[in-house]
Image (cartoon, helix red, strand yellow):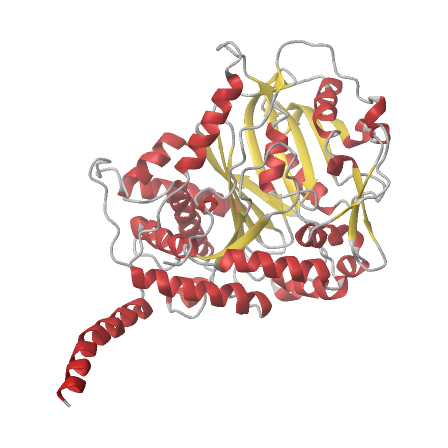
Length: 544
């Protein structure tokens, strides 16, 4: 049997339970211990993928092509409307300054290689890295959207690390917002989420020092939950494996045609123009228990299958609402809409900042826009994800991308990236946050969001926090679509799927219909004919 792809496809971003700061009051740590206050003499050379992201901020060729950096945005909403900014800065300093990439400037040498040059700790001015803004009770959704846009369009200073934050107090809803933006060059979602979660205070230890053991046990259970076996016939597995070989090698070296033009994809002629901004909308919070219940009613399905089905249904609904001509083309088999999704390729899990860097690969998923009903959308998503699990595509892409991104001239990469980041219509990522109450610096966290602003059209960010699931949508303003229509479509898709499954008993889940493709059926026929014909031919030879 062909080897299966990494189990992390079931939960694209699953970091290890982070180490957290204690909530009990202690003397604050010294920010600048003498032994660690020296800058490194030689900077760390970036890996191929980190180099690609860093070139967006250091290469003149990337800047001339209007390629913006890819940014990871963390929005931490605090219940307290006016937290102490110095206390928040202290929390970030304690945790982040010990990680070299969070105090490093990025440099490109004369061979277009990228290096991270760490600064001395006292050279990192947290008054500049964490700004304070008073919302004056009027700061709302439009202002937060403007904050996302401003962070995406603001260039990084060449003498500072590639991250910054803003603490907005006195929001219109009576809370405050800690907004942290980090360049993807520093790390991928797995490593950065682990770092950000490590900022959270450690819940009270009521078991006499057994908190660490409980954390490890919880992590092990989380890893076990995300392992599912693909339910494909042997012929389907072989066809998927061969298709993965083609995708991993040929499609990586010679990219296939782009998605058809649509309201969620940036028109090619607008790629070379400056981005006017990003539009942000978020769904309401869905109970994770309800999502798991829907998953349990469909035999073999995962939460990711449900999430991907919701996004596919929402894309179709949004096309219907705004009259997008792409929908008729897709329904008539003349076009496609695909999504990239990041898959963690680490053999273990990220531990705080110890495994920072970019060790993820983008898998490609074709949205089942042509589905007959919500349940059929889930089955189609499950079948396609199962194909990816048995495919070698991701491992092949990792090897080839490392070679291409690590050695190709920046002038070549800038041209490729201009089209590459808009080849698929969107990106979907799934992040698992803490299920319990959390706090930063003693301030309770009421909500959490983890998204990505990049140079393509649409981004779907799925985050689970305190047993609630929320989907964020970020749409480039060069697209003709409406992010609020997409948000409403996501919520309607959720209700449609819930209603379709309301009469199904979890103890008697629906079974997936046979979705074996024609190529696999032909393979089965050939093998069957060969198995029947071979004994006959052998017997005929003996008779002669």
